[in-house]
Amino acid sequence: MLSVLEYSSIFIDYLSKRSLDKEPKNLYTPINYILDLGGKRLRPVLTLMATELFDQPYQKALDAALAIEIFHNFSLVHDDIMDDAPLRRGQQTVHEKWDINTGILSGDAMLILAYQLFENYEGDIFKELAKLFSKTAIEVCEGQQYDVDFETRDDVTIPEYLTMIEYKTAVLVGAALKMGAIVAGASSECQESIYNYGRDLGIAFQLQDDYLDAFGDPETFGKQVGGDIIENKKTFLYLTALQKSEKDEAKQLEHLFSITPVDPTEKIETVKQQFIDSGAAAATKAEMEKYTQQAFESLETVKISEDKKELLRAFGNNLMKRTV
Image (tube, rainbow, N blue to C red; front, side):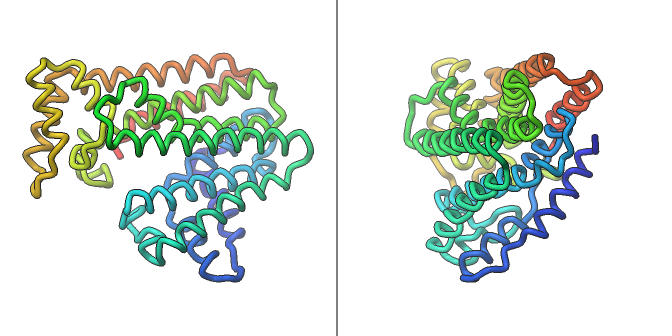
């Protein structure tokens, strides 16, 4: 087994060799652009890792890893259009650098290119990869729609929010690991267990992202602290604070999430204090821990050696200790 950094380096090298130098340039140049912007490369690394966890060389999974990275970036291109976002990873978004039509079409091409990569696998492996990918892709779309719907709803529940982040974020983490297991020929039981490990870790990761958005260190977080508060996003923190607050405090919080002041500094500080006073901040950290432990429980049922399980435990613990 290699380190996470080594797998990441191997994947980036493979990605660079698969750059699309094709016509028409205005279709393929934006695809190369978004794929070259960087990011954590978390999902493809997990696919490569999972293949070796089940005693097969990572090289077998490079195309599956590339497929999941292309799909992830496809979803970002379209999300950025929907959010009218000007920046992605500190650079112009595709639709800003080119235009909306280019963003839509290049994104569509990325989805098709991701599917094409599965054609490099034989028989049952191809079938299982494509089946998992289709299931995951439609769940990501459902999660995105839930997220859009929540912007105009005042009755979002905590279970609904957890479903949204599961579909929008976590299922792709689970799928990345399961793809590696499929390529390696692992049993269906092991495939499901490692999928559950990834999905629950993905939910914990997104809850942590919500928490860090409010309480992260501005020096290391990498984006504006309080961004979700400014945008009036109904996160786990907000929904839990509503549930745990007294009636008057809940009304005040609802009011704060209905306004967009020019200078949001006071709003951010007031909301953050209410998150703390209501117990929502502590409850969010407890929920993160709950899903992390659920992930580790699923890991226990995977039929791999104890030292390999320890690698995944360390990966999960490191992920949940981040400050960025």
